[in-house]
Amino acid sequence: MKDLHNGNLYWPTTLSNNCSYPPLQLNARYRVAIVGGGISGLLCGYVLAKSGINTVILERGEVAGGSTSANTGLLQFCNDIMLTDLIEEIGEADAVQFYKACQKAVEQFGEIVDELNIGDGFARRSSLYYASTEEEVPKLKREYETLLANGFPVEYWEPDTIERHFPFRKPGAIVTHGDAEINPLLFVHALAEASTSLGLVIYEHTDITTHDTQDFGLHRLTAATGAVIEADHVIYAIGYEPEELRGQLIKADINRTYAIVTEPQRDIAPWHEQYLIWESARPYIYMRTTGDGRVIVGGLDENNSEPLHNDQQRHARTDKLLQQLQNLFPAFTAPIAYDWTASFGESRDNLPFIGKDPAWPGVYYCLGYGGNGSVYSMIASCLLRDLIRGDDHQLAHIVKLDRTTQLNRV
Image (cartoon, rainbow, N blue to C red; front, side, top):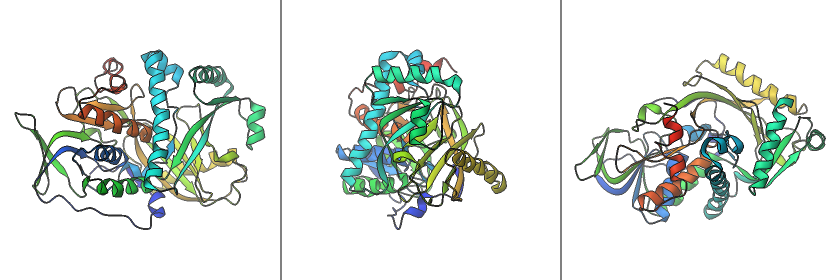
């Protein structure tokens, strides 16, 4: 099993208890089988179960034990690729539609949190996206104007306005409203419990070793125990593990990233309304707070697919994240309490892979590559449900595996 993260994770310390699920022991038949029990798989399972579709989740480890545990929990409708750049890449209509879908996905997180009655660990936030240098200002202003012209809830802040709200000054910033933050581990475990009450079946410690398709299209997934799941449709929601992918047209870069969580700060007041904060530089630093006054900082992405396993080298990088925080908030002196490194996937065109395998009928992918992976997973849950039901979805052509923007980068 490929390691997806290494270090001291924060989210597991926030759970007092959670349900466990048995391994697959007996053969069974379902309409849909989902391989992967992280946020992507559970969102798909929840939406399918709510729609009355007979579904099973097969997780080779534990629910939320992979990338979800290292997820920093920012939910934003803006993406790693600016709307202006995405318009140049795929056209204005599709780009705006994609951004609108991300905006709706953040709203859907709030709706599901309300359905699950888990108010803790979720908060609606605004975001501050600041220009890292003066040279970035013209592009940032164009982005603001494009977002505003397309009806997104945004403001543009000049340096003086930024300084009035925060203890730092930057050349300019876009403020977006309608974002959120979440405890991803709490959310996924609550989602799992709610889904099973709707009829979803979950098996943990179930490693799928073979996937065969019968002549009449039925899929057979064989576990290491020898037990077999038969399904009409199979969804791979497997995070950032490229060796698992079946589609031959998928091209993605797997990098590693770093994150820290501080001890609670003495006074969080200098952080205006606990905005989510990120910057225009690439790779970028991003920050958020927690309900008990901690700060989560992530970034320093590196072009290496493996999490860093040397503690001293990891600490050297995560200490830099703390310094970045203290450069912006000099009064924040609380030390690092948790730090980790994790694998991080990015597609060549900065869009997720969601949809049918172009060469394997009945097989689908829910792969939320990029910094907005949780938002993409929410989009995927509804899109894949529609495809499985035989319905169209307005984003299907934008995020499909064999889209033109990927073919051009092979």
